[in-house]
Amino acid sequence: MEFSIKSGKAEKQACDCVIVGIYESGKLSPAATSIDQASNGFIANVLKQGDMDGKLASTLLLHHVPGTQSHRVLLVGLGKGGEAKTSCYRKAVSASIKALAKTGTKHVASYLLEMDLPKECVTWKTAQFVEAAQDSLYHFGVMKGQATQKDQSKKEKIVGIDIYVSDASATDAAETGLQQGLALSSGVGFAKDLGNLPPNVCTPTYLADQALAMVKTHGLTVQILEREEMQKLGMGSFLGVAQGSVQPPKLIVLQHLKGEKTDKPVVLVGKGITFDTGGISIKPGAEMDEMKYDMCGAASVLGTFKAIAEMDLPLNVVGIIPACENMPDGNAIRPGDVLTSMSGQTIEVLNTDAEGRLILCDALTYAEKFEPALVIDIATLTGACVIALGHHASGLFSNQDTLAHELISAGEQALDRAWHMPLWEDYQPQLDSNFADMANIGGRAGGSITAACFLSRFTKKYHWAHLDIAGTAWKSGKEKGSTGRPVPLLTGFLKNRADKLNN
Image 1 (tube, rainbow, N blue to C red):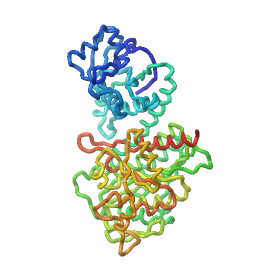
Image 2 (image 1 turned 30 degrees about the horizontal axis):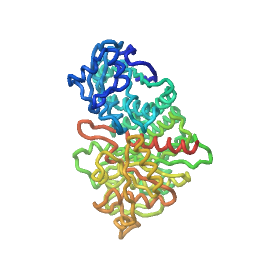
Image 3 (image 1 turned 45 degrees about the vertical axis):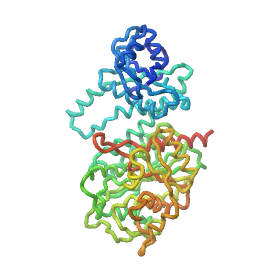
Image 4 (image 1 turned 30 degrees about the vertical axis):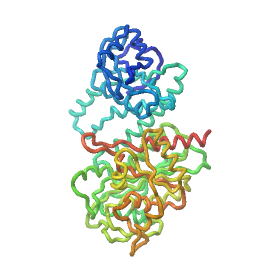
């Protein structure tokens, strides 16, 4: 789908459909007002008849509106107006694209940038428009048969969207937003695709191959560490999880070095369990297929690197992805086993289904070699986080409040929110063990917090944040699929950091 930035009157656009906004109060957006005047009150008459109430994300498709050159006009509800929430804008955009996807519309002219959001600039609105539009049309069909894919391709009719600015002087700002939106949607789409692939395809080796491909396509530096190299490094915790699978583990290291040579890098660490049976502490069979999404932390790191590479972000960023399967074969670790991590700390395994922290702890120790400015790990870590926060916000833990606030702010700006959770010393004793330096679980109470406490024991040498995305990385049920989160949050955070360093 092609996007372009334009300016001009709505009624003059010769295309398949023009999108204009209507507020719940009956107030027309400027573009809707322009069409209404050209059509001698046609839109006002439609509103009087009660066919459109302007409620947020409601739509009404009109054909052959007098005085216009477009075949159709789509009215989109913008809600109550005034101090509208930024999330309302994205909902309106998504509703408009989804409504037109069901029609024969190919070329669209959208005037939704006019939505009244005093706190947001044209650049932000444009970037969000592009990402929301791409997200609305996302479809994962690569594993379906050719006949099904052909049927789906016939349904995908929108090929071009012109995004109209109210003033030609805003064109440059909108163009900037367009490029940002395209890069972000590319990264989000990549993360979604990786998450949605079946586990017999998306193995640790497949993830490593995807990273290696980014050397040519995006100019990244990539290194893949194999089992033997990890053994030499003393990654006994990571390798303990991996030993139950025939799939070889991989430690994937990416580097985007576009900042000053003297600038310390931001390090992103993504959990890459490509399938999680729970190991010997095996999971119930119901919904176990969704454990292919246990590598969404890794997918978000790869997606973020794709986005920042396409933005050519002037920043030094390192990505570390420990990737393996958690399987219950005869060589798998058992409850009661004691593992020695790369840091030298020993871990009593009380539950083999608490494996994510076991692979992350060695990756977090490995991160020290890069002398990072800060480290952020991203993981579908605990069901307890889903109980605590549901599916709306990712859980955020940090040993540095300033970093936590920066991430929360970036999440709000990107409409990919996180919530700051406690990381108090009071919780640490729950990890006490009689047989090792710590246990890998701390009981049911505060499960997401004690998981973060476990990780914190390996991050004392740098500023660190942990994002538990177990509730936000994918959707279940009828809309089952990867969300691509938290690529928007991470990309926004890195962009903000680059802006600060370079201004």
